[in-house]
Length: 623
Image (cartoon, one colour):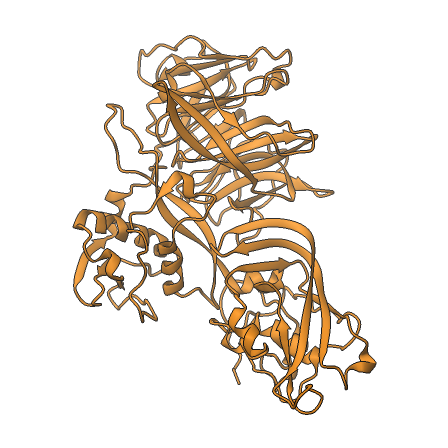
């Protein structure tokens, strides 16, 4: 019997009706009608979060009680599903794999009887149909996938352990359970935590002298079960297993193949000095120290956010004997091996009333034109992008027809137009450009007759057309309205207009060469805000984006979304009127910036929006 315990963060996913088991939240003690649909249990936003403990089946429980108890154990504190298996036949308990799939339903599963109620007393088997509206699935790699469709699955029960024929004695047990785990959306939010695993980008970043720089770490968001928090052991296991299938083609792990935690490792807990010791199996015993430290950096960044506010100050990897040290890495060493590709921007930028590119300090409202011809105002601009090292800028001309690139140095000239659009309408020409962490420039031409996504090596090379998957809608066509490349250079966010609506898509950037020439493609575009029509967006963290848009029939809102299509556990931001552009840094400590009806506005964490400049447009951070 478990006691009620108040936790942090998310909302409790069931009402007080579950308190019928002696005043504590025990699952497995309710009963389900043996026919018809049970009444769904709704979430209440005003109840505290509690920990829910699973309970085994009662003797002589009816089929409905067994099914109900089994489904409830899936929402309780049963981390290895040992109690859930007690509701299954011996054979089903062996074959059922709860880790294979998690199906998230909008209101939880509803059950209806498939067998006549009057036959219950003499029946040897009994069936139910589970159904509901699916909103997402989580696969064996812990990857989240939005999936709005109807869910329906048949469940079979039999009597087990009685005399021949099962008509006397025995207990009802589930012989055909659902595939994996099925639960409601509020239970999913309570039980699962979004965690960023980190892997190294396959495409090495470059410096100005073409010398390889440390490969950036790329966030790979997954959902790991834990109540109230996922155990560090489970998170490290997910990291060692490797990247999700979607990200795998563009990242690598420094852990040798088949590396796992040392057999018998149960809990990974930092000590009082915030040091974490991680024992690995024999696959890692012989790794060199330099490689070991890169492995430790992956663990450090994966666990650091999860263990805040205290955090981890040191990671030590151990050999398979569980005692001898492979390497030790502290915070400074981790950041040196995998520096944040987003950097620490010195300024925020926007286009002022003179249509020139200006900059302002991150905490000031005083702006000044950037150095070089691109900030002189001689060429009017309507949008711009600044390289992440803040040495170069690219700007789209006032009529949207031409892209210019220039150094932000005193006396630096502006190159002639690198890209031109032939679209007859100004609003169908070039979208705002974007720089990636490699120092390359991207821009989209919205011309309906010739929609293109273009890449320019370091912003100065000849434009290369990027192939991208247009098969997103019924007509098989898509037009890119906006582009933002992540600092890691291997993920790209696109606003794609399709079938009269504009949606946010995240794609992988693949880079190859053919005949010595670069070839680039954006593949496997996936929705990041499936319920919203998005009008503006910006990367705002390792796997988080800031978006402006609205759901069907709703009003404009500004909120954060995850790159996998899930919503982080945080409310929408305070509203603004008429927002047309947003800027956020992948360094999450920096303020948000937007262009609204009031002009350029800025919001620091925990504060209200404040007007910075009344006349200005197109705010951006470097990137």
